[in-house]
Image (tube, rainbow, N blue to C red):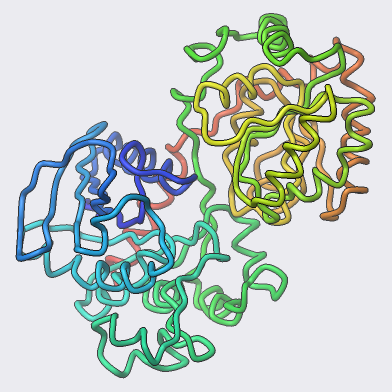
Length: 442
């Protein structure tokens, strides 16, 4: 089978978050299973790597690189000749980009059996695929980001026939909505965990699109497929960023190293690697800090909301038990998974999440809200789950963890259950192959 993935970012060439990681891992697993996987993303000005140009038409060009048995294609338009991935005019940029994809690939002789679009930036190419009777699948990675713009200006950017401009099409409360384009016109819609697939059909999590998603569910065209994890990159037994270990006894050296590096006292360590955002529940963590530091050291890696950044920076200056490092730091993130006792994920919603899977495999039980992918992947016998998105509920779960972390034998027996867990991409990739087969058969 020949599968074309379309997404706004793809590791290791461009990345802001988990979508890029999926674009590295899922196509590679499909290739390992014997299928031809191709990924197409924008050719950004500061792309990591230099694609080989294979086609040019005026001010549009297509480049190619190969990584891990997967062909990566990069489509450049004038709007992408600037640094950075996302900008305020993204709806216009990705609309122009999305309508060019299929004609450019046809001109280059690139053939595929099914198109798999990922998140709002790929929604428009799914609509164009419907026009050409190309089988397609569309995956929601985060429904909160939809690609909306005033439809009176924006519809002209799409290149779609006028009949797409309706409440049954890409129109959404007088806006153009690129996410909705993917939801309406794909042969099958997936999202990145079974629980999130149910949650997004409700007003609480549906971001205004719950009606569309309820219709897709009723048609049997909405599924939750949990993301996998790159288990070679995230393997404490072979991880070159930490002191490799295969047991909780050996993990202790990493705890001691992290404690020494950050000059922490003997209290247990709670780590967090996250984008600083309300979605991630970092406001909940912040509100709970006065109580948390009575029992725990806290080491946080991440940037995002400027108010949250300033508040955590203030705590780090005032409290010997709080450390905050901004930015993205691959090596440090590995050390925080390996060297902490527990891992904080108080998310208000979490479509899938990879951090909890990593933490489990590193013997670092998550303290997490029971939502989305966290509910699907954190076993009750290992992690500490809570239901309400409040500081009080988070503190109650942390209290359960604190009662055990001071009993090393009990804690280690619990934490070690996560070390052998299998979060590989093989199962999810096989499920996607089933879905591809279904949409191709129609």
